[in-house]
Length: 401
Image (tube, rainbow, N blue to C red):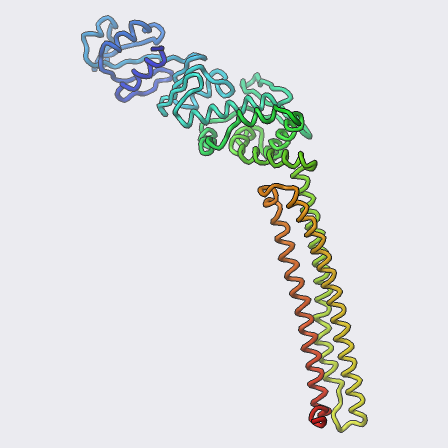
């Protein structure tokens, strides 16, 4: 059994273990395993024994005691590391970017050897190491900040994106929640495989830069870890659309621009409808005020002329609203054709991301169409009102019957 494994065994058997700097301190029952460990590795562990009164003991007298307090320095080498917690582990050597051959996180009781572990937090950390490996391969180069020993990943997209590789246990916890959904090794194999290898690298860098743009310098790597699933999805969407010869983000931007143009056209049509809404009640007032009672000379001829005028006004209004409805349908046909093109070219998940814009246009179209029909109804009511006023003054139907 290796030294680290034997130290872990000892730690698990200790009563009330505590840390004093890099040293472990606690009570332990004396047995053959303990004596053997310190006989073999006493110098490496810098061990001290105390009795229950706190007096230092000679290691040679250890066998005469049943319980002692022990203070020792656990293995803390680059290849074999015993850590108090993850922050302690990450603060040493270059463990943010490379994995020790074997290590133990005592507060999690998590052990890892040759990148094999059953602890989910350590699995999350190993995925972050894989992520760093992927970033190193797609980066233009990596740098080391001599002032704090942090590595920097340099990505060149539209400008230079510097990502300091700084993260902590909180970021590992965030990645832990989705660790089973992330396969960085598979993504790396996909990015560096033919066809379109250079394009895929560029698209991945662009997707990363998009999410990191608003972040401060030391927020970038934690954001990259927390948002990696979204970044991977954006990359996948962009690559799918690259194969169809256009960029997902560019298409989305163009669609938003077109949506604004379509909404403007629809609103212009609505502006015309508002003007016509005002004309209807005005026409009713004119009809009601201009028709003459039977006491006025030539009242019948005057009222007939006014009624014909109301009928002509109604016909013109209906022709105008019909023309506006035709314009409305033309706008709908235009954006429906674009919608159909996207539906045919995009897979469902991509199409669903863009379909909300078309839903807004459909809602606006239905509203405008309802307004046009409402104007038609008002015109019809106005025409019926004109006939009623005409009948009131002339008794045309009463005399006819």
